[in-house]
Length: 147
Image 1 (cartoon, rainbow, N blue to C red):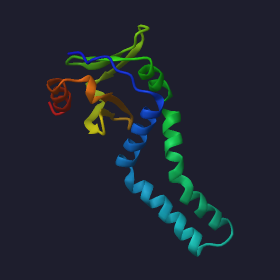
Image 2 (tube, rainbow, N blue to C red; image 1 turned 30 degrees about the vertical axis):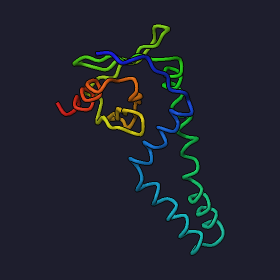
Image 3 (cartoon, rainbow, N blue to C red; image 1 turned 90 degrees about the vertical axis):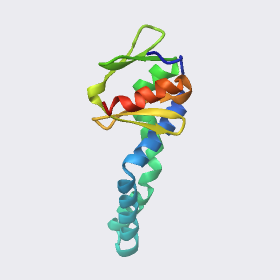
Image 4 (tube, rainbow, N blue to C red; image 1 turned 180 degrees about the vertical axis):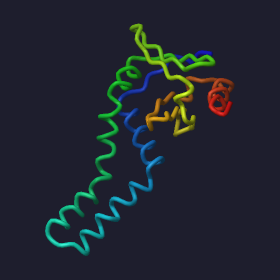
């Protein structure tokens, strides 16, 4: 099967990455600022500085998301077509490059906003716009990991 051609700009990719991080590690995003607040209230001197840093840490998530999506950002920004078979899903770039994602590496396929997201076993992810897929293709990809 083959998707329609699609593009994902760097800002949108960083937004999806931020949402993925918050969905998967919400508990961590809650613990660090809570620790920071406790350090700020009950600490003194350097401990309060650590508390302020911990409170501000969640604000860095979008920036880190933008930095970590650089390689896939270049692929998706120039336009991509996805195709898949029983072994893997392939992302084809117009310049002949691309990426291969084997099904064995995919941990889960989820819907995140307007994107179908392939979560990998290494805690990475690959997004694909839902608009690039027909209903039958979407169902095929959502159920592929369960087989």
